[in-house]
Length: 375
Image (cartoon, rainbow, N blue to C red; front, side, top):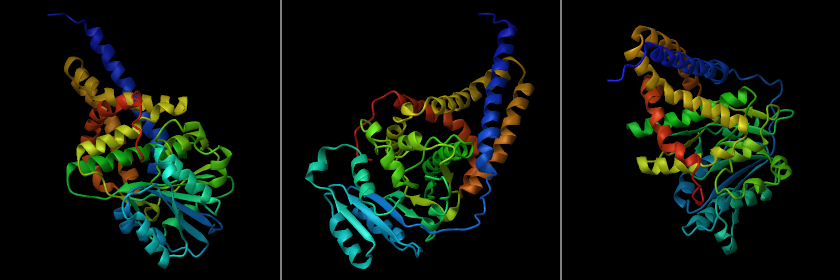
């Protein structure tokens, strides 16, 4: 057997301590921003004219179930709902015609045969944005429903002097089973990062299920022209380009969340996440570095803990790990409570063990060319 000098195990232990220190930095510097977030009280609340934009492709079933929740928002000021029907082959057109009879503020746009060969969601979304009558845009998907009738009011109320981008939370409905918990935790974990980074002055993404920005920002940046070669990225890559410390606000209010039905099988969900992660390599360098360092340190924790415990000093390794564990427990509980996901807290150690395996599945997507699908 190879006789490994004790100094090697000591070095590995110090590497383990460094990894824990990196994790503690992220929890204290970034994640506390969401966990202990307090909404600022505005002296004057305003109701701005708003255009809600929804893109749909063969989404008749989802529109029938979810569009009424958008159309019946409790909002007295001028607003419209723009639904872009992207060459659907189902009954979407007829369904929208029926809705139009009851809701005069519904404006649906039928994309013609010529747009069929244009890949991705960016073209129909661009058409919807350019057709919008109002400066403030509120974006969501056909498979999403607002969590309350105050969604529109609460999201637009975040606009203030200098604010051009507002980030919201797109949650998934609670269902039975471990897959539902994994999907919801991954969604929470992503939101924990993009909300915390935004609150720390480093906004890097938003989710199209619940996102708002001004039309002028879209036009000023020539729409999606800089990312047109990438089928996805209409939400995260666009926000990565236009969001700044000064022009971005967040809305962390259960009344302003949207709800979606989660995927029902592991393969469907992994395909969805695999597609989403293909945009990460196009983020700004500072965002790629910070996100990469966090993921790498998370990936290393448990292998280093095991080696340090077995070959160096088990109680010292557990003590170091315990510092991060207690801090993590407190901050995750507070953050989950903010995003109405606190039932997941009792599972957080399991999720922490599972995340490195999740990264093993999704990291290859960063280098692989994205599939050219609509969503």
